[in-house]
Image (cartoon, rainbow, N blue to C red; front, side, top):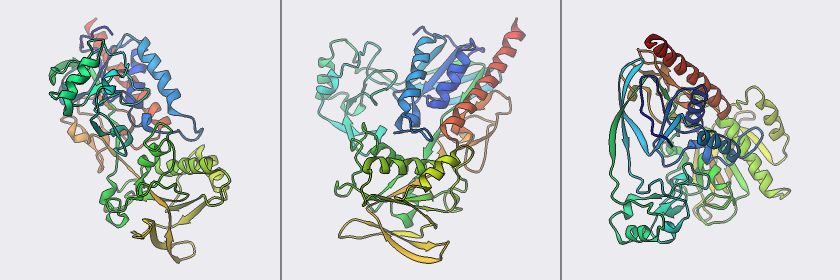
Length: 430
């Protein structure tokens, strides 16, 4: 990839998830130079961790592969992974952005052959699988990672295993002397697409996520059901490795709650409806396979109402209108037991399940006030207004909880706004 020298007509995109990739591509395909940075070793963000999209239930690999091809073909996009913004100063058309790149310890000679991983025995928690499993300390982040380049974990740098990985590489791709690099760039506009992070379920003490092994989160469940995930697509209970057939979903886990997140994350209901189909698909006509969805309201907006009705029609799925009060654990079996009141019939229940999934909400990965002086956020930290100088634009879930479709639309809008800024600069300098 050709080296980019950023100028005041360059657009910087912070975040390489689906929103950041979209914004970068839309701007570059309109002829603008773009610097796309991502703090992780590869692009893709949360979407790359999904098993399937709703409502069509197609795999994210399709959309990711298309975007990757577009990026490879566009010489106007310069990509820096393992890079973060540390400071932003300046005004519209003349921003100075401080960046920090962490060492990958693998250079562009890497062919992703995997020889380094074979030479290493040490393992680290697999962040891509939300630490549900482990991965070698020399690793490819995931199968479709872009760039297709391995990473050496710092834990083995300076050790015999690090040297073994280096010796195993036939392409001179490993550089254990890499150091963190700080530098500054000048850009005309910034698109902030740093996405979202899952709410910390351990804060919801009545649900016992940090105490009960068979209480997991919706994002962990998504990885479990992926054939490339930690359980190979099998729905195995973390406590004993047995297949779970009686599944509970708790909606608004920590959301719409003054004690945790006051907002609705918009995607949780559809995520659970989608995930209920995974169970139906896996177990087919097994009479022991059943899903219970505990909900306050089901928010399936627009065209998703049809999807909701299809799930409602599945005899294996039961909807229980209730905010679960608390969860206990049967110590002998490890079964989570949900306690509460069905608000349609006002019947108390103590329902036992094999596995309980908490449909947790979205929080911004970076709060608005942490970005730059003049940025304003709502009560939850999502970007609410632009900076005072008018050239830092939120894209996707940095500005609002959104599903993938709306994130892509929002990112396109952010790209158009940034293009207008650099066009004005070009016109003024002509």
